Length: 115
Length: 110
Image (cartoon, rainbow over all chains, first blue to last red; front, top):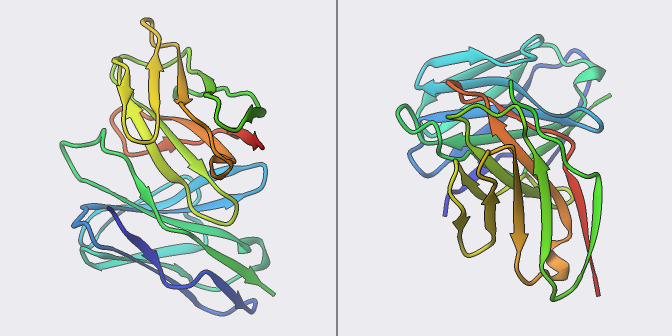
């Protein structure tokens, strides 16, 4: 079974802090994704990566950056956390190019609160 | 981008088949349909996906109409643990992008 592990289930940070959310997958997947999920808005794609050191913006990249130094790890960074970034953050992974029909597999999420 | 429409909620008796419909009338020829479910406070769990043929796995069956404008997810013998929000998703052609709708909240009743 695919395992996508997010480092924290719950996290509380203060406005202005730099926040790191970590995600690790164990299936040698090329693609990794970061989403946020908010009531009434569904899941929205923040960033995705299709290879080590490669990244593309999703629908709502403002206020976020990402890092992918190793294939199995994809980090989401909130450069200066703000209260409107309080949300559930979900990481996902999938097989890579030539296999776009392969499903994404999600972690259990990090519920982040910015005070 | 193809969008999906699902009923907001459904009930199903435990042990009966749960049939969850999804409309995706603007789907294009090479766009797949995916089904996920999300139990409260967990991440979405992949269930099944298909292009045009019916599919079955250990969790569920997926029936796609011949014109591909709608599909039905079938949980053959629903249990209380199947209570969740079920999402029907179309992946935007040529991208990795999923379009998540608001899903169907399925409640399995004892």
